[in-house]
Length: 391
Image 1 (cartoon, rainbow, N blue to C red):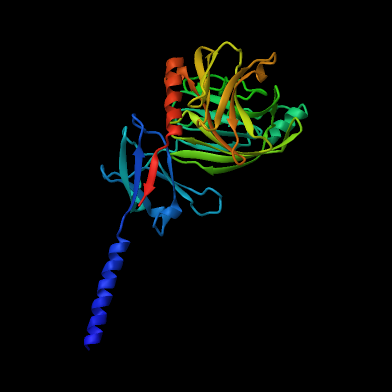
Image 2: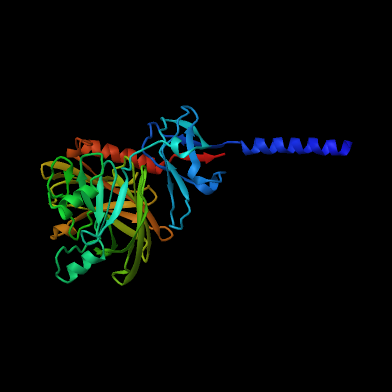
């Protein structure tokens, strides 16, 4: 009988220890070691690092304010299983904040508009277009290339990146395409208060298209051949593009990339897989060559600030200081081939850079100085990322 009682006590004690371990919270600590507040950086937390059974009920709570963060689940490989949870914390200068991983119901999740959006656009040949609350972009697919090579209507032969100049925070992609192509009640080439597409790309690099430089010549790829949307949501949109192998002075270049755009950012992130070269050159079209190229190789950015219609426009390429090799202004007779190039190091067949724009008429930047201050801050954040630890 005494033996049975002892076993019962041991089982109770073991159960209590087990319960206490199960209730142990997972804490995410985020540290900002820079001397300014950071507000628009999206953090990626691998769900495999969190001690949870059901990812759909995961919440992230600020321990100090006791408020839940807006989050977004992402299936990176399209297998139906979520791989990451995203959130966008606000971290004061030279400080750290603790966040607790909690279990919440669907009704408890903070609501947020889906301002980060992208999609394939079959109604205009085969554009792929993306946007957030600040900027919008598009690239061109194989049907547009086929039309260009066979003298058909709506041709576009370009691996350059188009800039859609928006000056409202709400989404415009679906609205502009519908008005222009379906309802035919307007045109996205005219600004009726939301912005417009009056940014010429042609065969240029646009805002961040790449080239491979061999001696003094820049070699270019053609349109993307495959696409896959990865995620759209309140904090990030991302998608995958693939290209046909292309030639750079006898070098076979193989290229694919994932492009993402986060809430509040003017620059898209280009995570490029590329083989056949040790460097790439990401370019900014110089249009009429009436603007000013500037840059900072030490922290890793190049910019082009130019007059643009009835306003002004800044475009830029940014990479971390180990990736950013140098920049140059490349001028030739064909204005579409003139560009400001950022020369970037390829490491293990990968290179990451950011490209985007700031339009004065949107009210975000008043002048070249404001734009360059934004680039400097963005560069500092890339070179000194937020430190994340999980306990």
